[in-house]
Amino acid sequence: MLGRRELDRWRAVLHGWAEEWRGRGWPDGTPAYLLHGYFPMLRAAGDLDRMLACALDEVRHDRLQEETGGVSEALVELRATGEEVLERGDRAGLVATMLRLGFRRGELTRRAGDTPVELAAAWAAAGRIDRATALVRSEGLLETVHGLCAIAHRLVETGTGRPPTSW
Image 1: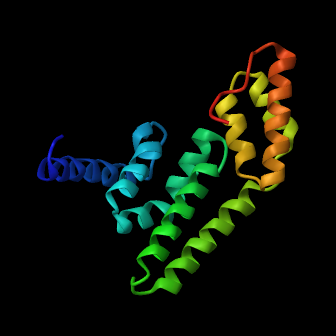
Image 2: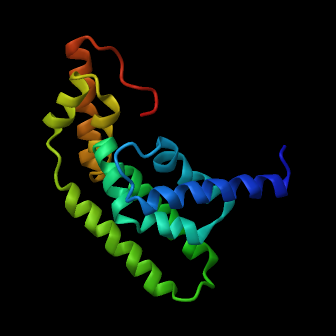
Image 3: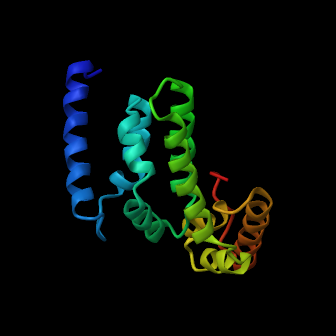
């Protein structure tokens, strides 16, 4: 609707805004869009260089984990970036780039460790369902299923209601 030129102009504004917050070290109070919406916009625009910058930004991931309580969103960014790198295939340094993404993924999964399902269930009982699901979604598939079941069970026990439809 805006046209290519106008869209590019507004994206440039967003890039400048993101660089400002990156330069500040992604402090507490970083706008939610920069943590949750900026990367999907980069992906939709096919901006691989900026996708890589986000996917490999440890400080940004620290802020994201602090806000959400888990590493699942960061892992999604890493996976999407890796897929884009492989899809293009002609990028110089393909192997080195994939190794960097793999190492970053390893750091995140090691840091996440094994989340006790009881902790996720406690967050759900406290009304922090998004935080609870973020905790369990950073685990392996089977652990995620067990965690989501524990959260649902706790929600039913406490009378909080049904789990979110986003599951």
